Picture 1 (cartoon, one colour):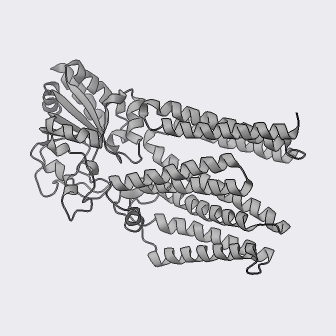
Picture 2: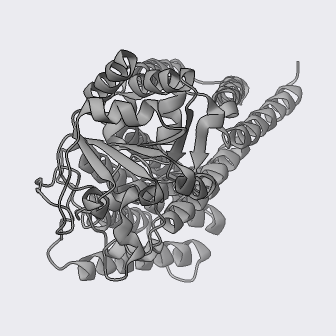
Picture 3: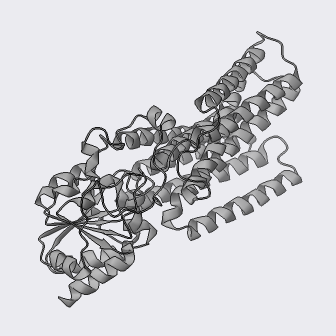
Length: 480
């Protein structure tokens, strides 16, 4: 078979892989088809990787022995690490893992662009279009690399979740941005012949641009508080895709361009949706993050009111004799790994004729879709998972709203001007006839403020770990 035929087959395989990415992404719109969408995307990536290996093996005189050794070692290390983390990571740590993947993806895209540019620069044949994509890929990739590491460190607790302000603050960040932009313009003008740059000078300017981008990623994310970190992760995910697309232009790989564009566009859309769900602009999030994590010291009152504690037996009576129960899961449920316990309680209530639904806020947990995946893992029926717009009107007819580890997304203070969460769309839990909150303590949520729902006269607080509290409720309902 001639090389031309081989390349034709390779390009068709790349196109098939890209089509799998598009279809897989579309199927991820629904929890019911999300798993198959993920599998379809993985199959597309497998096809693309195999086609690329064939392309490299047949291009020119093929790869040398050392090159094959590097590829094999890369597959073993990267694939082995990916398989281990995918199987061992807890669902509660998934946002941190996504941040790490963002960092790896952004760093890899930057390195690909830089390596190709160095080779072209040594030959003195770096054209303007290649230079543009190299500089953008290297800059965006370096920002993503360090920014994602900081975001993951904040979520993992290795770095304090509260905003950390860099000396000089926004002036330092602006100065870094100016340096990066100036270096980018200089490299493009040099490639166009408008100014004369030697080979060494060109590489030195590129190094300055990359270093500025890396420091910019740190100074950009450090001042952002824990409450805004899910939006930051989504934004950095968009940056990763954009950097990958730029690297695809540099090396002339269409499947990398398509995959990167898909990640970049979907990440940008998701970032906008999450910002809207918090009723904040992306610019406001990047320059005015708030919240210091969910480990804020506990208090005895919420919003100046009195908190009413309730026992498991009393809650069980309310649940067992209710006609409608809406369960509101939050990050506390995820931390306690209580998804199976809540499903068991829900099934028990359904066997007694109770209508059970789950209210899912767009930013429940620490990542979009996090709660859906967690509950799907416990085989909670998809039709019972209701998004905020769909479930909010039903709280008025609900007998009991059972809040499990959710905090800021249920805070009525969002409806009142002057609060840090003012205007943020929330679940209308306080409209239910009776409210039960399972929580370990009166600790504050990621926004760092008291939840006024806890002082509502209709609210009873069941202080317990989510898993233990649900187990106690299940046993009490069975005993009735």
